[in-house]
Length: 416
Image (cartoon, rainbow, N blue to C red):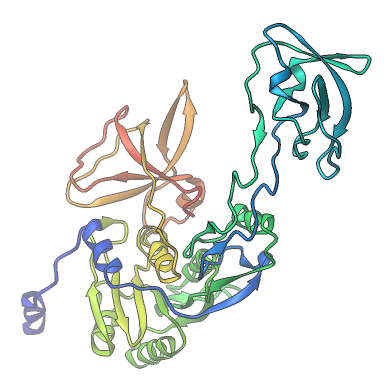
């Protein structure tokens, strides 16, 4: 009894708001050092360590933006103009002559502009007959041309340092004739689950056990970010085992990611261990689900201690950890979460004080976007994440939500 009374009197740090927690994280982080040169195809998902400079103009020459006819604007009159067609220009097989007075060249999209021509007349606006083309009035000088260097001028920055390469970036690099680029080294992330109740998949459950799903969830999230992953398995709720796991992770990784063991239960040793081995910046956030989340450092490794409930793991990962990993990977500027208002189709009870992330399904109904709850909203019901396509975000100050109210949603597409 005296022990319990002492625990009740012990000071507990206050919970942080979502905004303050994000600030506490990002004011401490700086990108990892180290780089490597990789082939363009191997740069997918990697972060550029230096600017990509255009070694040539893109496009390399003035060319046609449309199929049509290359003409001299000076030849066009206020009435329909008749021009003699003297050849054809293809992309990769240009017209080698000169367009003279009263002449036109049939031209395809991407073909270099023939010498003497300065305007492209779109094919659909003309009619042709017996080697002649008839051009209607109303054309503009220089129309439908793409000028050399219009997309990128030689010597300009094609892609800045800190850019994460997606399919468009690979294509842009290839369009410059560049075969390899310099990228930051992958972020090394060690992760493990804690809990004596956790069982590995592939064997029958014992009394009181549950299968460890969190490691597979986190593996998927980390793999999509291109991290070097060290899966340390399940660590027992025992101080010596946890300490050994933390020390090994800190030696081998830039980031330590755990699930479970950060609440106030009797077997939750992680907070105490991290305080002894390193530092804890905070361990509670005013969100639901995911209130018990720790952030700190052990040695040179950053620590994110996530809750044990499967949905809370995903909520905290996508609202805090993913962006932090991108920052550590050198991504600049960091992508900001995009939220927008839609109408909700049902009533949701809520007490002000915490930011809530509900799983929702957004769809179009009656010409407007409508969101509904996706399945049971308990923090242990991972199926709700699978059935959802967005988070319904209810800010701290918001109370009960009525059907027909406007609510904020954050789409999974591009987030998860």
